Length: 159
Image 1 (cartoon, rainbow, N blue to C red):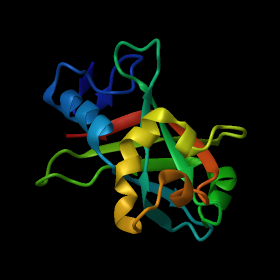
Image 2: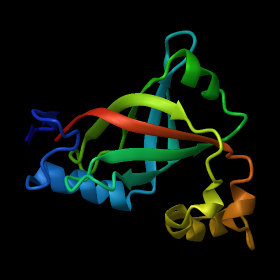
Image 3: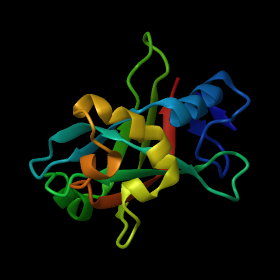
């Protein structure tokens, strides 16, 4: 059971029967951008907006799962993934509410299919590349986003 996002049993996501739990699950499905915060070499937090795909664990009726993120292969944050793998993710606030902060460890996935070969990712983001240039497709747009990471939340807090 979750109270304001604190987990009191083996589940990470808040109780789906609560307003907070409903909000978190809706936003995991519908939001296009989440903020990924790493910690730079200087110790300074480095938040970056990223596209993500929430992948629910097949065996989890509760909805627990992980974030799949495709990263720019020239991004400075890549060095932090091995040196400082603890990260946080959060959604933008909605009228002062809808706060959800996820913390966990980032894992780099070698040999994972590229974004344009993940049907759920194509469905979610394919239509979003057109504003970045007429005639662009997801495969072309994401050609430099080749470092694939998974973040499995260990804690969720918010309201």
